Amino acid sequence: MPPLVIAIDGPAASGKSTVGEAVARELNYLYFDTGAMYRAVTQAALARGIPIDDEAAVTALAEQTHIDVIPPTVDDGRQYTVLVDDEDVTWQLRSPEVDAHVSRVSAYPGVRTALTQQQRRVAQSGRGVVMVGRDIGTVVFPEARLKIYLDASPEERARRRYEELRQRGRSADYEQILAAVRERDAVDRSRATAPLRAAPDAIVIDTDGKRVDEVVAEVINLARERLA
Image 1 (cartoon, rainbow, N blue to C red):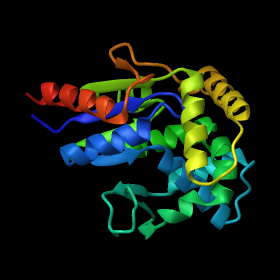
Image 2: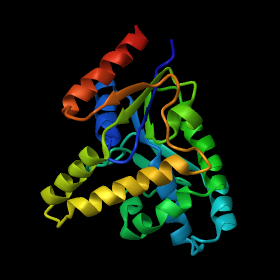
Image 3: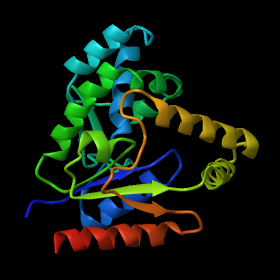
Image 4: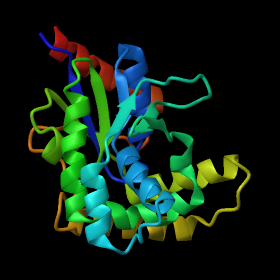
């Protein structure tokens, strides 16, 4: 039986990245946060002087650029290595400039279509993959044998973001974070292309009041059941 593709979807701050990375590590699978590809296109556009508001040019760039996500090639704390036309851009993807523009790039339908094809290519590489995003089980890899939808209340997700910022020594306003979480939810769920929703056959896990290790154990048990 081929290795699993584990699709993990859910709204912002539901724990997808934390849980996905831990599950991948336990199973010796590739951890693949599909958001990295949208960041890669954004970074490439900025580096090449392509205006972010030029939808046609950014879409063409996404169609012409080869992006790979592979296991970490450097022991520097990275979760994976991202290659754009064979150039390692992993840490460049976390720049403030990319942060400021990635949401707009990821909203372009043509970009989403182009990157969905690249994400499928990575998932079909022959090894187990934990794919994390907002449309994996519904659009990118609907044939995944295990689909998880992590959820949590807006209040809980805002609290997590608030605590994360405080632990980093940054100032944070809970009410502002909560408003931003609700706004992001509304955008993700109402967009015309690949709106956020649980796949009909996804297992929904409400993470309110659960520790990370509890959720990770639950997903790993489900994965081992599928592999049995």
